[in-house]
Image (cartoon, rainbow, N blue to C red; front, side, top):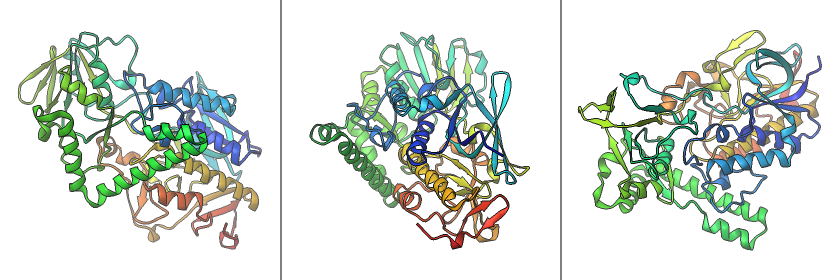
Length: 494
């Protein structure tokens, strides 16, 4: 059977647009389309519109390897990141391949035809689209709704309640008493921005998070652009930040207590003696057991010192008409409550996956090199790093997928599939962080093993070796022609 497309990419966000550019550059003969459930390019950076939305990674590593970030601010705001993604799509004519309003709900693989049949909901109708290779770039969370705990008395509050994922322009915080529930990246972004116009902002957290300040602008990167060609300056800044990031992360693993004390010392230097660092800024876990929160140019600390914002570390008992009652009995009054309580993790955009008539749940799958899955042919999924910029892993994933597609062409194979017997691997849950959104979703994620290549690594250097330079024939990847298996061991290594 002829496929409608050689490759279908699901998602037109940062990952999907990057995947299309890589495919055009490295597999120019392949036909492709991008299916996007929404009506705009940008993914996360188009969906989230809450005040102050910005990256928590520098744009020299969050940006594409092939498109230099040239803005002065390395910690960029949402609109500029959205502009960057859309510019990339237009420059490479990727936007001409996007089918908006197509929400993928199911994918079925047929080994007999070496074909994926993808079901996409378009308005009131379902469309069937076929492809040889299915490349998922749909992110890792539910776009329809964020996570909100089941607070007692939630409906009794007489003011307004908003979740950052569903922020709309008509949400008014000027001269209002605002409570922001949460201590993660979204909360620390919202607090200083809303504090500019609100009567007062309280960040209500159940437990603290490690918070680190760094300049929004990278002086060395900006200087390098003045003295070096643009592409060389970008590579320099990118590798500088990758190296520094890896060094810091490795220190958190080898000397966690020393790093912890250094981080807390930095907070004390920012805030002085007027704040309770032990209660409000000292987590119960070690650095990088959960993501650190980045605040550019100390904006959160400045808002706290100004008195326009404050932090309260306490447990919520219930919502009441005037605000929130704490377990202590104290009531925090508010006009607006923002539930910055996290994401709802969702694997593969919530679609169902079927291989030769067998339905596969996410927890049935075993990850292969952090991008494919055991016994799932011609299928890859972008899942970025938790300890570094998402796009670093996305770029490497795209590079590997293109190598794989080209190898199949060289061999005349119809599909490739990673395989291993259960008795040869020790399988465990995938839990890269102890954060609540991962803990809640452990049964929604694939499994991993205790040894490579059946692991979701969060190590850029190791992934470069495995995905960019490693042999495609590693003894686990098999190349098939319909049902006739080709002996991968006879293929010469690259």
